[in-house]
Length: 200
Image (tube, rainbow, N blue to C red; front, top):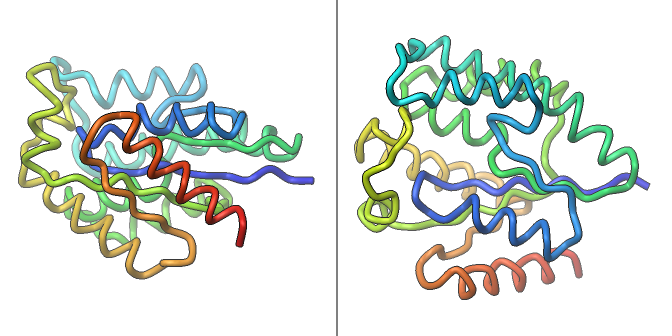
């Protein structure tokens, strides 16, 4: 039996990472994150997100994210699924489509094609989008931000719009959850949505 693969998505400051961890605990699933999840992926993460370094140009950023994802899928996600474990990933391909495809203006189709190759076409069974207004998400981020978080509200607004488009285009595979309120309130909304999805 193969496990189920769930990606948790959202713009920066939505609380997505916290909710992904809580969802993995709720389901007894393997938790992982992108970029990262493997030693190579974590090194790429540091390189891409370092706020003080000489950051990659936009195309290099997209390719580095895809490289980290290829390693992550091959070394973490596929083995866990093959062993019958559920996997919850904090970000997956939709992040690249939203951030690099739309936010950086590289083109959603181009970025999706690169990531299709990187992942061998592996798609999540479900995508949970934690949705929150850009100003509120920016307030939650505070002052300590990584290189992409420092790109400003303009990028985040494009990312939010891209996520909305993807969720609208694929309603059977996407669940949109209101990210406002306390951590427990959001976690409860996600748990109820997941339970409903599992009962289909």
